[in-house]
Image 1 (cartoon, rainbow, N blue to C red):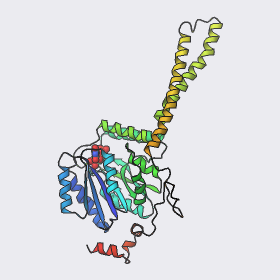
Image 2 (tube, helix red, strand yellow):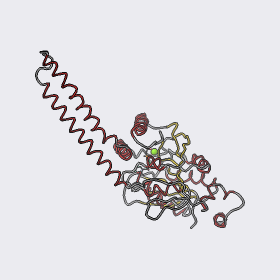
Image 3 (cartoon, helix red, strand yellow):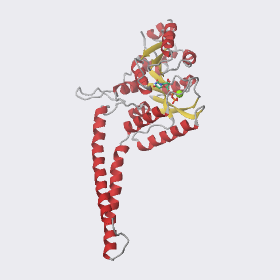
Length: 351
Ligand code: UDP
Ligand code: MG
């Protein structure tokens, strides 16, 4: 089988009502582009019959619809990960099943990819049909993440994005368990750009992200990309111990001058504050080590090479993933649209 130019990866969890419409609209958009494509539908343990519907879509259109069916519900980010593992395209587009991410935006993402951008993320300039609570918590969440993490994760951006194959190769090597894919895609680097779009309301059904899952997701995001919570103890410890030390001369002077102001518990309080501060600082130090262990365990690549004149020596752990003359390179530069079609593409056109 030849490689499709585009893979659309969609995580599906109980989206029976949206699926036929999703397939119809994706198909319409992709056919208008006139290049080989595939739709990777990852069924994340649906219980509403979506699984059979996916099988049926595959039966009707085996050339384009590729099912990946989970044995149980593993969660949105894991489903997207599986989709990225199974996708074979030169560029992979991740989108939701509920049509909040309109397939009609895909050509805009692809246009940027052809200009040379390796990650094209869709930025929500407007969200329709969502509660003020969802919008407010989301706005707060993205701003908090932006402030306390070390990676510049673009604001108001979900997983709706196009990812080039070479970025995908790096993401596939990042096997951390608590996954915040939009952060991971930012971490990788390469040329990235945003494309504005209007986030539509859900086509059917209701959100699969209740508050409980949203909180867990936020926690995964923060802990995957920030040490701030671990360092919090240290900061508090310094404040507490610092205050108690400052209080010592104050109390001493008051006592010596015979003032009644700090009679009673002052010395005990100072001791308690000071010891509490020391304990918090020690906790913070432990936290620093835990953070480093966490970093090692995640086992991310040390660096990501975009270009290099030669391959690394065998003992090193990274390699440049540039294949200048492969089929994806030709298709990206739009060569397949010209008359000089390659044999492989001609054969595809006649399929
Ligand atoms: N989803 C999934 N597994 C889950 C929860 C959600 O695969 O455990 C999928 C869901 O089917 C949808 C996408 O993830 O395609 C986003 O979910 P949803 O639209 O409910 O989130 P919201 O847009 O409300 O944040
Ligand atoms: Mg949604």
